[in-house]
Amino acid sequence: MYLVAVVGIVTILAVIKVECSLHQPMYFFLCMLAVIELVLSTSTMTKLLAIFWFGAHNIDLDACLTQMFFIHCFATVESGIFLAMTFDHYVAIYDPLCHTLVLTHAAVGLLGLAALLRGVLYIGPLPLMIRLRLPLYRTQIIAHSYCEHVAIVTLACGDTTVNNLHGMGIGFLVLILDSLAITASYVMIFRVVTGLATPEARLKTLGTCSSHICAILVFYLPIALSSLTHRFGHHVPPHIHILLANFYLLIPPILNPVVYAVHTKQI
Image: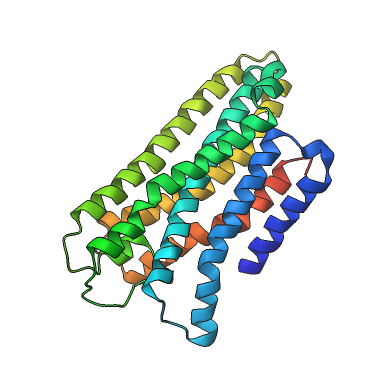
């Protein structure tokens, strides 16, 4: 699965770099998405393979917190890129003539940088709070194949209220607000599409959004299921928790290159 993900991501990046006609905002955002998914899958799969192949079940606390930062930070950045891509689709459909004027290369770069800075700002305090506030643990066994914030915090002996509130706040800001903003944008997009003159124009316009909608669902549904089972699924068997947590880091990097390659005629 890791090799399939890497091959798909590298292929997408290579095709967009070589083909000059793809040097457009939508494909620049797709490149950012590909790099993020490469980081997410690499930060987890390398350790996962070491566990299976070499029995390397131990991980240093600092390495664990570093892995946790990369996972949650780049998942947050990915959500921001999806939001930026939705804005790109809206501008392209609502006012095609102004699309290149609004979303210049500099504007695309600034949106990508804003998504990255938001991820660092949201997630940066998490490993610091664990390192400084939770020095003692009931057990050193993490019921996961990687270092996930909730899985680590539940092991701590001290008061974890601040950690839990911060984690839930990030979940609300990223999952809820981003998904609501994306939904609102697509409501406006569909209103514009329904106003187009011919059915052919409507289908063609909706076709340009289909790959993006599929990618959003592939990203948000597994992460939402994993978060909900962690918070409220106390009776869910541990192996289901682990399986869902792996899904949201493994499935999007594999499916997204396929989705974009199949649905995007230019690629």
